Each structure stands twice: as C-alpha cells, then as structure tokens.
Image 1 (cartoon, one colour):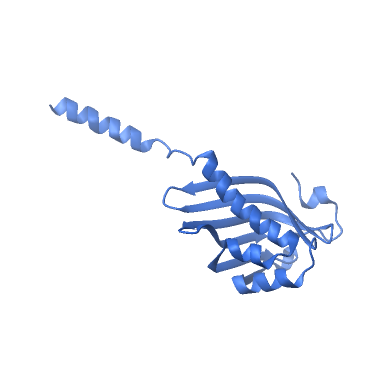
Image 2 (cartoon, rainbow, N blue to C red):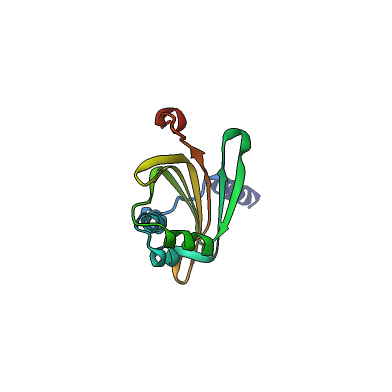
Length: 163
C-alpha cells in the first residue's frame, strides 16, 4: 500500500510540475480583439468605441522623454477618452508588430506587443506596450495600459525601432 501511495504522490508531483495548459486560440483572439478595438478607437477618434473596452478604473503609464530625461506620464480613463475626442480620425495610428498573449483561467490576461505609433501619418515613436485585461460579466475590459515611448525624432526608423 505504501508503494502505491508513493507512486501516486510522485505522479501528482510530476503533473504539478508541468506548465499550465495554454489558453485556447479562441480566448486569445477574444483578448486581442479587445485590444484591437482600443487601437481602432484611437485611429478612428471614436470615444464610444474606446469607452466600450476600458474598465471604469483604467489607468495609463507611459515612459516618455529623451533618454537622459525619461519620466512617467500617468493618465486616467477620462483623460484618454478626452484626448481621443480632441483628435481627428487618422491622427493616431498604432501598429502592433509582434504580440504575445497570456491568459489566467480566472479571468486576467496580458498582451505584450512591440509597436510603432504614427501621428498624422508619420512615425512618431515606438517601443513596447502592455495591456492588462480582466474578464467580467460584460467580457474583457482593459484596466491598465503601459508603454515605453521611444521618440523617433527624425532619426532612422531601423536605428530607433529595430525589428
């Protein structure tokens, strides 16, 4: 009996050491669709579309400024929606170049993306973005957005935003 108990304990230990099953492709698409909706809201200057995917307590953290003077820019849901309301369609255009999605079965997800930001059709800055989402009764909502805003400043794209 002890041998069986030890064998079952060993199997349970080994199974516990295996990585958790990854989220289904459908769940990843749903999370990415939520992020893409926010990106479209920026591009279309559509406040209602942006509001639909932002959690009421949404926050932004952006690392900005020249290399020797980096600072954090912090904003709220109201601040972002007001900014979207003041731009014209096409003024902001985010290109997500590479994305990775992690989803916790309890309803938390993170999207990590390399991006380029175009302002009025010109590459303005690039870096990495992180979107943190929670799933509630109304679906996935973005609660946090962070990015590293590396200004291009007239420099060659490849030197500032390498692939």
